[in-house]
Image (cartoon, rainbow, N blue to C red; front, side, top):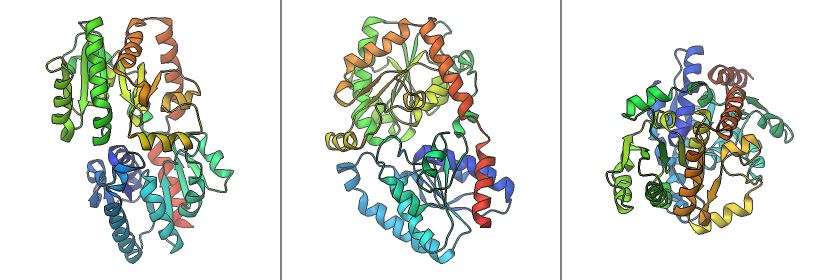
Length: 375
């Protein structure tokens, strides 16, 4: 198995639960993180080695190292010939590796269909060459892949089984030392170094402006431990030192506790939707990466909640539009709507989405993998 970044590590860990239940003596190794390690996974390299952002400068600086890791892993796997290779997300790394293994007769499964329905549609040919089977986390994906002759199974989104249908806001607030009547905004600028570089300052400047309008707002930031000191420094530069609560991890607790969240586009936005929380989605990246992404974008939405609901149910402020002023104004509109029909309608949409995504992912994924091994 190869899983990239924290989100891939979480997904792979849940699948490993199903695999170990089916095969107690399973041996699993490759590239992974702490969630996989808890399930007895042996990591030759840690998953965070695969964490990259954008297309251009950021990637070019690390491409040689990534290619070297992939070459070494490919040679090792071709020699050891595992029963199956499961690539979890990280398509830029995994699809090329899977294609090489598949060509040599090693069964390959790719977990999480690359978002060919959103952008980079040319990846469908890479998927066909690389994967014997694709495990899909969104219900519309298998039919789309079938149009291109690619076998796939909808396994649901694992997060929909991890996150409760009715989050306990009171318990989360008690855990974080927040009052039931507080106005609480969660700030999630991302878990990658580059996201912190491009977004954190804008988010904290927006928080400073929100405080001017509502001095009693409580801000909570779940921080990746190795980025916490940098986040604290950026907050201080924005004049927010001592005015925000930074906690180590606990993003789910923070999302459960908040009234609204200012959040970086990515998997965290789906988590926020599953917690039924209003959000403002933002993103900013290197200008060249942005230009390249715009040319390949196939849908009007970027945030997962909007893509899945097929509508702008929450605002998206991207690149130059993600100014502190605009971010603050959009977030305050959600706070002003507390208890309104607008919030109730959004919660109903997110609840319906939750039901759609909730499946026994570990079982369904294990069943599909077993069939691939047996063929």
